[in-house]
Amino acid sequence: MTSTTQRHLVNVDMLLSDIDALKQQPYSRLAHSRLLTALKNELAALSRVIEHETVYSFHQAVVTIGLESTLPAKRMADIYARLINYVLEYWEAQEKVDSIIDSCFDTNAEKRLQLLQVKAIRAKTQFKTVAKAMGDHDYTHCIAVLGLSQENWVWQN
Image 1 (cartoon, one colour):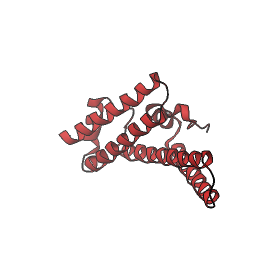
Image 2 (cartoon, rainbow, N blue to C red):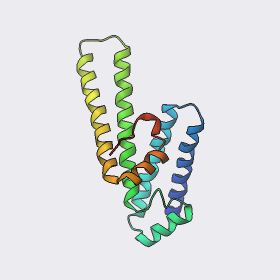
Image 3 (tube, rainbow, N blue to C red):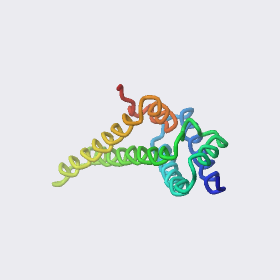
Image 4 (cartoon, helix red, strand yellow):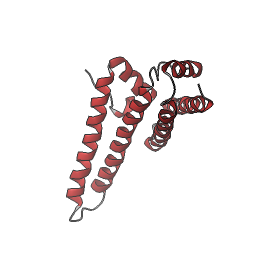
């Protein structure tokens, strides 16, 4: 295990703790979005570093930090980053949709609104597809650690 891997895992653990702390506060999508963006970037950096780690050394590093239930395999860092990206895409598109609806329509507003709604739906559908492929246990754990229970990201299988 390299010190770089350990550093990234510690950063991931701290970001997950910060996301968990959001549950005790009134919900703020801006704060949540910032933390998820930072977590996505950290997971991407971790993925690059662990590419050359053995499965055993990665597992030992994860156990040392205490993230074995969150990152039971090396590929989970990429999966979490992908899911976070879909959530951020959805929120961004939905924010723009809300802005268009709240403002005065111009001649192109309806077309932009339709395109953004399609983008939001596509991001949420892609999230759902990846989430269902994870299995119920991993998905339930994922939405819990990412703090997505209040945003209707939960589906019945």
